[in-house]
Amino acid sequence: PVIGDIGAVPRGLPDFALPAFDAGFLASTVQPAITLALLGAIDSLLTSLIADSMTRTQHNPNKELVGQGIGNVAAALSGGLAGAGATPGTVVNLRAGGSTPVSGVLRAVILLVLVLGLGPLAEEIPQAVLAGILMKVGWDIIDWRFLTRLLRVQPEHLLVMLITLAMTVFLDLVSAVAIGLIAAGMASARQFERLQLDSVVSVPLLDRSFFTGHESAHDIDAFSARVGLVALRGSFTVASSTKLISTITVDIRDHEVVILDFSETVYIDDSAALVVEQLVDTAISEDTEVIVMGLTGAARRPMDALNVLDRVPEDRFAANLDEAREIARGLLEL
Image (cartoon, rainbow, N blue to C red):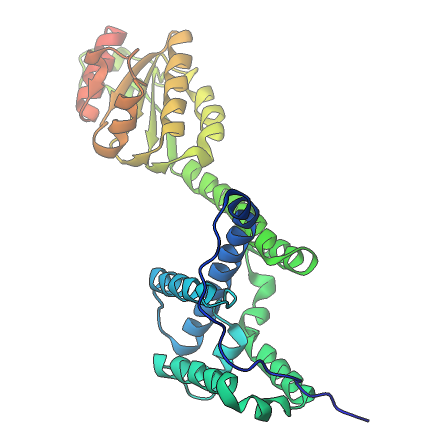
């Protein structure tokens, strides 16, 4: 049987030419251009990640994409096609010991020499040889160490990987990356929701303990807790906004006074700030007095910008728990 070879290799470089720009040309090329740009960027960055894992280095994504863009513009002006980082060629390079930019330059020079005159030599290479090389390269690309730990990956991450894999096989790479990013964002939002809700502390403050030292403390019911403390610790974003309302609202209704503690709050985005506004409105509608404690810095900025706490009087803001205790004592007329 005859084993097929590569076949004819193009010879010579195309001539430099500027495209003829007109409205119809631009309209017909915008979508393909965006698709090629996305594919090229994704391919190059994925190739860079694989190279990083093999060489224990860290690439500069901005530098990679800027250089690729300049090269593709030059290729287009000379009649060439857009290109990107190629994982098989990179893996072969690294396996052969080429771990510096010189190896990439040398590979490009060899391709240039083949195009300019040594193409007939490459034409005789059997396709079976190339197929064998590609199979070996594909085998080397697989992260076998990760596959052995696949069943121990968090379910959300495993689902994202399987969705992206299915979209890559049955649709295309651009769609797979877009859907994968959406799925990854949803998985991350779910994790952030759990972490942020775990950072909320809502506790009743027993009157006899909270108002210790007050002259009437011994007359207070031992089980009375007219003041509740809601501490928002850490960062809070849109990921936990909905659950925050349902989690805290129940506790607010159980007290005559509620202290919203922001002394350990690092960051609040606009969505979480609006949740605080809803909590304040709920407290007021339930005739529960609101005291705001320790609100400063990054947590205060979105509150002030959105006028979230405009229904809370100025004398209900406290810097620490001692000030909040005195305000609560006055509100309860102790």
